[in-house]
Image (cartoon, rainbow, N blue to C red; front, side):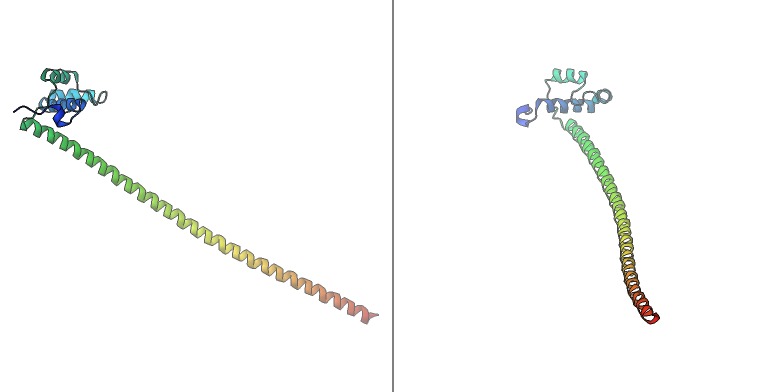
Amino acid sequence: MDPPTDHTLHISREDLNYLTATQRRLHHPTQRRLHHRHQHNHPSTPSSSSTTSTANSGGSLSLDPQALAALSNHFDALLAAITNRVETLSAQTVRSTQASHRRAGGVVEAATVEIETLRDVLRQCDELQNEFLKIRRIGEIVKGFRARVDALERRIGK
């Protein structure tokens, strides 16, 4: 039975090359080290020796059970590492958000206390203003009484 062609797998040539190169690196540890050195410069391009191997074999993916199991395990480990990183970043984001929320809550609480203090001071200022108005009114009443007393003294004194 012939292995399925690239067309029946619905895998692009680039993906097929990547899978083939990854499969080869799993079978040849020296290829893995070489790949890690070149991965930062060309992450989607297989190393030159992998390219040669791919070219010699026609770029086909090995479908033997051991090779597929190794490839599956490799991608499972890769997926687990990605999942772990996402979970770590998610937890860090939650902690950061909670810390920001606590800080914001503290700021709001402090602002509320300050607003209440300011309202109390304004209420006291209003009370003082009312007292000053009362004193002014009393002063006007006293001036009125004094004017009457002076008027009475003049009438009596004459």
